[in-house]
Amino acid sequence: MAGPGCGHDVVIRERKPADDEAIRRLNDTAFGGPIEAKIVEDLRKARLATIELVAVEADEIVGHILFSALKVTIGAEMIPSLALAPMAVLPGRQRRGIGSELIHHGLALARQREWWAVIVLGHPDYYPRFGFSAAVTKPLAAPYSGDAFMALELVPGALSGADGRVVYPRAFDIDA
Ligand SMILES: CC(C)(COP(=O)(O)OP(=O)(O)OC[C@H]1O[C@@H](n2cnc3c(N)ncnc32)[C@H](O)[C@@H]1OP(=O)(O)O)[C@@H](O)C(=O)NCCC(=O)NCCS
Image (tube, helix red, strand yellow):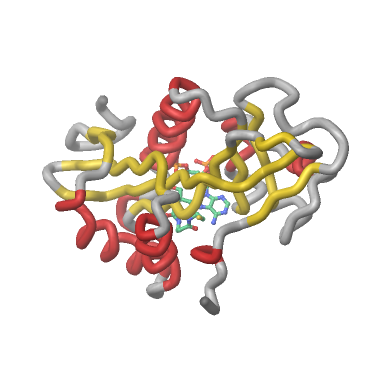
């Protein structure tokens, strides 16, 4: 697909192992440190990395997004859920819709693969445009709360019900 305002076509595709070094560099650059790249590697090692996409422009990886399996329960029921994190676009390529394309493609795949919900801890001004809402996470017992802790139900009502819980894997424990 062609990204809006791009000189080159931006192609979104699934990550291949050969991309990993470029993905690491991209995360280090976009976040200004190694924490997010380590989270990505730890989630892969733990076999939790589920949907992983890259944005490629003129043979260069300029964007990356990872959705990983997350333990979400409502009462005794496991709700097939993903964490969206991290995502990054090269600083020089931001604000041209690449991040949005990564999210749209990722959510489409998540729907297709029958995940019920996606949870994100991120900028409260950014994710609501994709349908994420902090109101949905409010009743959940989780390590996070507030405007930045948002969810999107791919199956309506997936996260409603009594005694909802979200347990993040160790990969997200940045002290681990
Ligand atoms: C967040 C990020 C992935 C967005 O990628 P992008 O390709 O610039 O996104 P898009 O072009 O689709 O959307 C741009 C929008 O994102 C918003 N945005 C970008 N960074 C933002 C931030 N830190 N806080 C709030 N909004 C932000 C902009 O307001 C812009 O909206 P506008 O066009 O209405 O002004 C990119 O800015 C990035 O890599 N940031 C550094 C790493 C990061 O913070 N990742 C997210 C947390 S996991």
